Image (cartoon, rainbow, N blue to C red; front, side, top):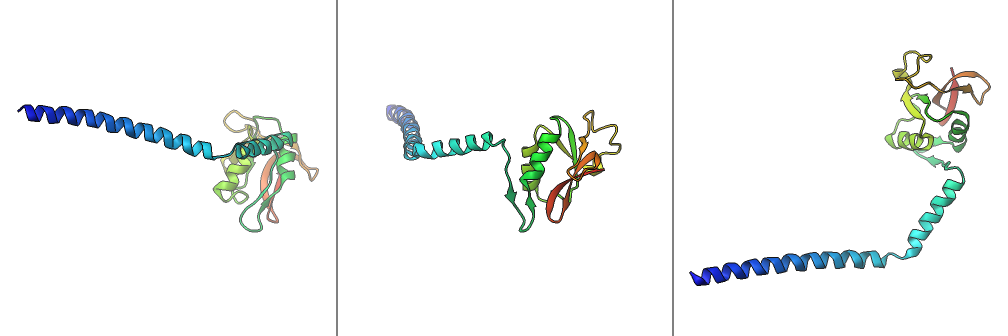
Length: 157
């Protein structure tokens, strides 16, 4: 009987010791990993981010072979539309989820909505007005984001 009580107490103490040892080992492991990453890595990333923000946060990328979303189109939209407007887009222009995500992030706080979801451009979309301006081609109207010649362009309708 006393031997069983002794073994139970020994088990409880050993269990507590092993848990503590595991926690200490985990903390030491994390500290060791973080100490191996040089500060230059963080500094370089912060410097690139600061340069990108100083340039107005405009970026371009290439996806799906020849499809290229141009910096000029996104920059034009940011300069010529107020924040908070809705910009309808043709689903064929942004076929891949990554394309939609990157364009959406570049145009924030403007809202991208599928053109088919907008019944009446005059009424807007759920209380938000649609973007209205003179397009780069010189036509005035509601702005739509469409794909032409494997490029993303702004079209007024």
